[in-house]
Structures are given as C-alpha cells and as structure tokens.
Image 1 (cartoon, helix red, strand yellow):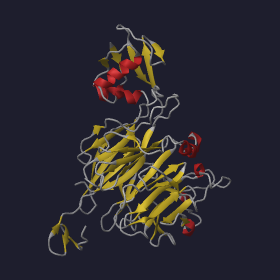
Image 2 (image 1 turned 180 degrees about the vertical axis):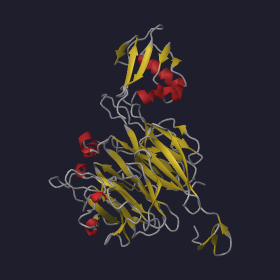
Image 3 (image 1 turned 90 degrees about the vertical axis):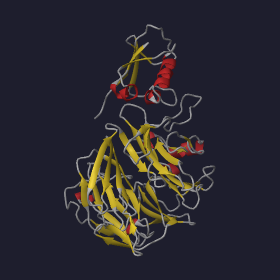
Image 4 (image 1 turned 135 degrees about the vertical axis):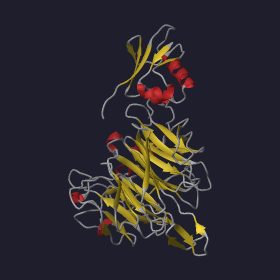
Length: 396
Length: 85
C-alpha cells in the first residue's frame, strides 16, 4: 500500500496530494465469559457505540474480524453446559449464523479419543488463501477451515501424533480451564510457514504446511526443578510476529519475556530490564504494527502463589522501543492503587492506525485504550463480564 | 415420538417439545440433528460420548447407552444439569 502522508483535518484525514482519504472506522471486538460486545468508533477513536451482547450466556474465547475481506467475523463459543460451537458473520458482526461444523477431533477406534472442550484461538490464514482460517483448541488441537470458518477439519499431524500427544501432557499440565493450543502465526511471505504455542507443550514451527514440525525451545527457561529439554514443561503464554519483520517474534512466557530473531533458533530473555518489584511475568504480548523494535506487555504478579494480578495493585503497561533492552512504565490514566487487575493473553491488542492505539480488557470487565501508543490511557467501558479477548479491525 | 428438550437448545428448535424418529437413542439424536442441524454436537461429543452436563431419560429412566432401543410410544426427555454461575 502506498505510504501517502496524511494530515489531520477537522473532518478527518486528507492526503498531501489534496485528495480526501476516507478515515478508517475502527471496531473493537470483545469476547467475554458471557458473550460478545462490539464497540464501533468514530474517526478520532474518541466516541464508541456499543453493540451487544451477542450470544448472551455463551463463553466466547475469541472473536476475530478477517483483515483480508474486512467483513467476515468468527467467534468461538460454548455455554457452560453444552458442547462447543462457533458463530460467523459476513457483515462485520451485525448479523450472525452458527457454523455448520465446529472443530472436532477424529473419532478414535478405541473409544478413548479426545473431545474439543472449546476453541480458544482463531487466526485468519495467509493473504493468498482467502477464506482459510486456523483454530487452536482446548485440549490442544490444530484445525483449519477453508470456507471462512463454516466447516473445520483437523490440520496436520499435531492432533494425533504420539510424540505431540506426549508433549501436550495431561489435564494437570494445562491452564486451569484446560490446556490450550494458541498463538497460531502465519508468515506473510509464505502460507506454509506457521508457528504455534501450546500451554503446555512449547513453541513449534512448520515450513511445509504442517507435514513436519520443529520445536523452538532453545534459550527458554522452565520452572526450577523441571528439565528444559522436555517440551511438556514449556509454557509459552503468547507469541506475536512483527508485521514489518516476520523474522522477529516476541513471546510472553511463563518464565518471562523473550525475543527470537530468525534464522536464529535461540530465544533471548529480554525481560531482565523490567523493574525487579514488577517482574516480567504476564500473559499478553503486543507488537507494534510498523516498528519491530517496539512491543508492549502487561505484567502480573508471579510470586509465591501466583496471584496473577497487577503487581502491588498498581496496573501498568510496559513498553520497549529497543527490542527489549529497556522498558518504560506506561500508566498515565490508569488507577494508581488498589486495582488488582488480570489481563488474559488474548485480551490486549493494538490497532494499525497512526498513531497506534492500544487496547486491553480486564477479567473485572473493564475495557481500556490508549490513542498514543500507551502514553495516556482512558476507560471505554466498565461492568462487562470477565473479558477473555480483545481484537480490533477496520470493517470495510 | 415426542422429545422434551432443555431451554438451552430452543435456539435450534424454537420449542420445548419436538417430534423425532429413531429405533435407538443414537438414531433419534441423528434424526434430531437432521431436522435441527448442529443440535447433536452440543449434546454428544465427537467420540459419541454424552457430554458432561447432558442427561437423557427414556420413560423416566436415565440411559447411558446410545444403542438403547426405543419404541414408538416411549417418552424421551433430554435435560441439562445446570451448575456454576
């Protein structure tokens, strides 16, 4: 896309060549334990019109607008008592239909096969594969749709391969509401080059469209007393690929913050520069859409019994502008004390506008944003249900 | 035969009581799915196991075996065991 310089006017944006550029209207898609809410913004991202709830009563782990067509939205949901399902929209979330065939494992001949409890992660595939999506489930499974999310089939060897099944561990090795496959990353240069993470089970890469995989755990620490050579003991919380440099991946791990620069295969611990009283534990990881040296995290208390709340009850985003060599506290506008927030791994994101907006949702149902890359924060919504995921998009 | 469903499944049927046919519980559930696509997977997982919070009763008796035979005059009740908040 041409990088036309834009100048802000009272009515939106105008290109320097004098032609009007239609301002992009952002939408924030918020998945919660009780349904989906959509916040549609004005051109300045200052006023938000709320739509919802959609699927009230459904636990929705992820809802994503397809950036390729800017119309298709897929939401992964279940109720507390029925099996999992999905919903899809072809008008950016205004109307929805239940999908025909949500992800399901292959039936096992011995009757001991796994069943999908919920779909946890959704990723639109490569730009050259319109309508193709990937999904990660709990327990860990990898699925693919080729019809815009309407039907899903198991993808690659991952789900039933004995070695992968061993690495996935048992229910006891996973997160409290089930072990998960997440962070499915697609290389924008090659549709067959994918990464994903498993909690537990480590970081994996395929360069041949899922026929073979390589594990990437060199340089990553595990909890003291465990063997770092065993993938089961690795717990990547969130992986993000830099859009402007697909060879750079940031990771918020159970043991800290890391960066990987390909073609290298060794993760570098970049959380050492975080303040000692804050630490570098957390769930989400956000990368700048235009600058591969800039990334953000939301630290949480990982001491003793792991409260997983903002350290000292003082929430803050931390950002780096130099690929993790140093970190700056970004808390202007956030509560100064007695705010014991938890932000889940999918509940923090950015937009792609200029300047970049940042967004996060808390398990206490608050939705916050910054219009200036974290310098100043404001609250968009309170009193939502527990927020599981926050995604942005610009519906067409 | 008549099947009584829990409210969580009304989004598929629009009603509490619906008609379905089958000479076993499994056949009945597959007929329900043909009439209301997607409803079976919400109750039965991909390994053909009844999901954790679903209970199926035939003439007031809970059944665990999907191959349990059915007669034309059997009363089928599918219930959802609510828990949590």
